[in-house]
Each structure stands twice: as structure tokens, then as C-alpha cells.
Figure 1 (tube, rainbow, N blue to C red):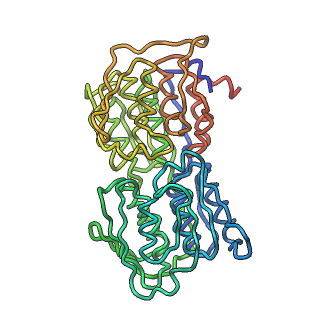
Figure 2 (figure 1 turned 30 degrees about the horizontal axis):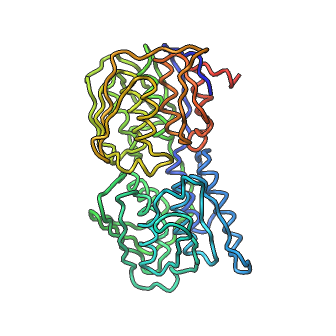
Figure 3 (figure 1 turned 90 degrees about the vertical axis):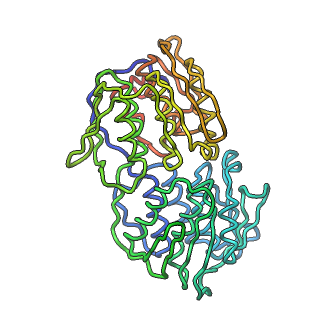
Length: 426
């Protein structure tokens, strides 16, 4: 994808996709509840479509009569893989759960260990602790009368806990889930509990212990909120603009999405947010309140690429902690952003595996259509979306494999074409 110019004085109306995280949780609840999803504003992302297709596929297959396990490929969709690990362990059949080369390097051991605590039969096909998995599925929940007491380590991902929680109401005795390890991405866990409650689950949380009663999920209509993670790239675009303004349709200040913190972070980066009845107005106020930004991404890891790119574009120093788990995403996002920003003269330092410093740069280079800076996507949708708005500062930019944005924000380029000149879109 080549970006040959950018409009630094824009006023745009943006329709964000539905939250992928909310959509996937709602689909899993409906699966466990045994009813068809009635989900409005569901994400159109590749990941959500993939999860929906696989849930339908597995509903009509138990693989009992097959000589080979039923193979399911999750590509590089970490959420899909983790949610299905629990679901398939509780569904009769032999299942081979796999993914692409990157997925095979993303850890799953903590979830497998937790599932084995209440009888799940799961084998590693290759490297211990990593996909692919051979799952000997059986309805393990049915004979459980006492409360299942499970401990899960969430140091690497809160999705390990979410995967278990979504299934918990189906256990006859319910579940007591203890969260172990250094807690990460806890707002996503709160989103899980909120989604479950909206479908009628009875849940009580006491610190690191979560108690879920046995109950039937209720067949209700669920409305997915617009995606705050996707909004972060529009905040970045406004911050890097001369006089930009974006109306982000449907965003609400009151939300369970942890990435809504992006509005407070960018308040220090010269961007003001005004919430109105039907969305959020985001505009450049040119009041840059800091010369360096310090932020801990432990609870909001998906914001890292956009904020790192913004600091680079504004010539700010960024000191970022809580980045340890970014190595386990669709790419190693710390290494990927450091590599791509180095192409425009921005240097970075890894203080530890959990801290990165992005150094300020006095003046960014300028590029033209005949000689654009060429960025690598690293096969990661969030890397692509974070690099694109830098065209507002750099001039011409080319991003390889830019279509990977469909993983979470399929209309990203169409929306961005309102401020970026994209010849390939016509």
C-alpha cells in the first residue's frame, strides 16, 4: 500500500468497526448457551468471522467416526485459538487445533494446565507449551457436581482466564477461578465479566478470586460498542496533523473497554476529546503538555503501536513499561516498532524485557512518491495501522502487506482515504 500524500488539515466523520474483543466474547457465550447469536454491530474483522465459522463448523461435527482428528486452523488469531481450546476440550471428538507459523510460537501452556485441572485431555503435538494441540474432547462439565476450583496463570495473557470464565456457567457446580502470576490486561477480564453478566451469568469477584455460579446463559440481544482500540489510530492521526478533527461515531465515555484510556493519554499529546450524544469529537488543540511520555502498557497493550508512533512523529521521548507480553502478539511488537521507526531515524533502547525507551528526534525526514519510506507490516494489523498516520509527517509512505488490517479493522483504509492519498484504492 502506497501513501503518496496526506491532508494535515482534515475534518472527518469516522465509522469504527464493532469491538472485536466484545464480539468474540458474545459469540462464545451464545455457543455455550446453545442459541444463535443476536449481536448487533458485530465486528466485521477477520478474527470474528473466523471464530463464527469455526463455531458453526464444530457444532455439526464430533469427528467420532473419523480416523483422523478434525483439523481446525486458527491462522494467527490468538483469541480464537485460546477460546476454542476450552470449548473443544468440552465437546465430544478428536480435534487438532493449529495455526500458522507465528501462532505456533505463541504460548498456550498456562491455559492447557488449567484445563487439565478439571480433567481435560490435551496433548502437545510439537513443542511443550505451544500449539498445535491434539484435544481429546469430552463433555467434562456434565459429571462435575462440586465447584471446580481452578488456578490459571495470566502473566502472559488474560485471555487464558477469559477462555475458562466463558465456559464456567456450564459447569454444574460452577467454578472458583484463582488468578495467578503478574496480572496483565485486567480491563479485558472486566469486559469478559460484563459480557457474561449481560447474558445472565451470576458472578462475584473478590480480588484475584472469581466465583461463577452454575446458570443458563439467557438468549438476549447484545449490542457491541465501537472499537476503542481502532480509535487509537485516529487519535494518532489528529496528534500528527496540523489542524485535524475527527468525529468518532458511537464512542462512549462510559465503557468497559480499557483502551478508552487513549483519550486521557492523548490529552497530553495535544489532542482534546469532547463527548457528545452520538460519539466523540477529537481535535488538535496544539497544547503539547509534555516533552516526554511515560506510560505503563500492562493493562492496555494494544495501544502501544499507536502511541509509540505518535511519540516518534511528534519528536517526543517515550519511556514505556509493561511491554513484556507484546512479544506474544501477532508479531513481537516491541521489536517490530523499533525496527520500523529506525527507518526514519528514531532510535530506541530496550532497558529490559519489560521496558523500552524511544528517543526523541529533532527533525523527521521527508519522502516523496518516487522515494517513499518502505515499512514492513511484520504481518501485524496494529503495526500497519500505527505506521500509516506517520505519512502526515513524512510525506510518502509505502507499507508492505498492508491488507492485514482486516484482522481487526477491515474498513481502515477506506476510512483513512479521507485524509491519506491512496492510489491503489482508486
